[in-house]
Image (cartoon, rainbow, N blue to C red; front, side):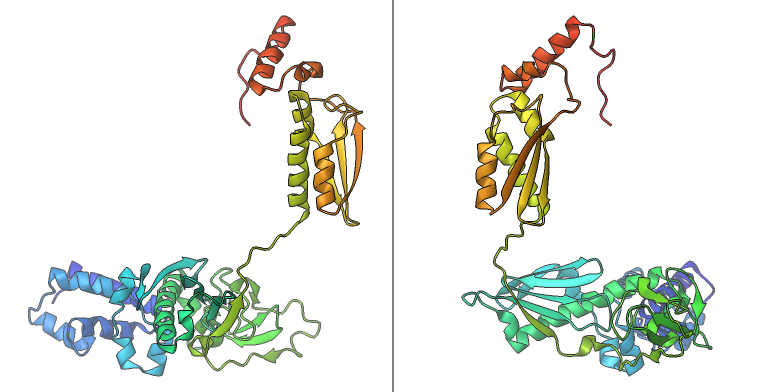
Length: 386
């Protein structure tokens, strides 16, 4: 078989598969040949020289095969059954059923989440991280993840999808970022710096090139992201002499999941922004005309650490003798003491008194434009949004 377009396509698919799964090129070539029912790439080449040609449907099948990567650990651990597994069910895995329970599967920032009514499982991007199983505190609903058979099926779906996500990451990164050279040197996928020894800024650990590449540049010790991995410990005062090697027994993803019970009840977090929002809304309740509405919208509201709220109102927009009754009532419900004062500042439109004769914004706008027009103060062009 000559170097045909189909032959070059097969070699390109093998290269892509090798990068995605962080395996040697010759392993990928043999796997491609195996998909065509040849025991090895060498046997495939021999058949090609004798006139064998690949069919269109076989090429389509190979392209689909390359999109279904197997975790790199599978090749290192020599699991032939897993190596030959086909992830056909993943094509319909975004939504589906496990027994009588519906689920949805999605990828969020490279983490894979499979979830259903009252439960969820998260498989992190980090290959060494343990899957997290969460259930709700509500005991009345069903919690199928407590069933070992259901849990095994759901974990398999999530882990196989995570294998695809990690393969996509590996494909996007330089080849040397996921496969050390003969000197065990690897290239950082972000900074492109090369080294055989790496350091985690969080746990002060020494990490070999093989370790960090295998773990997709997450610290095998603490799980820190690639952003926290450096070729030199610039924070060390003794030039890394006191830093200890990170010990890792391989990906922990295969281990027992971390079960967590989540309190699903809504919790009120009254931070400063939310308090200000409620007080401003109450000021709008107090406003009886457009002038006061503008005053409520432009009011300066601050929350003190000592359970107090401070409201500054513009004197040209808010009457000095008018108490913001609704704002005071809201503050009392929140357990806050209120301090109100009026200040003078430049207001958005001239003649603030015009806003006191109407509560309609459209009517106020017409009156305001007419007033500016009488003094020749209208702009020559329509206002443009910034």
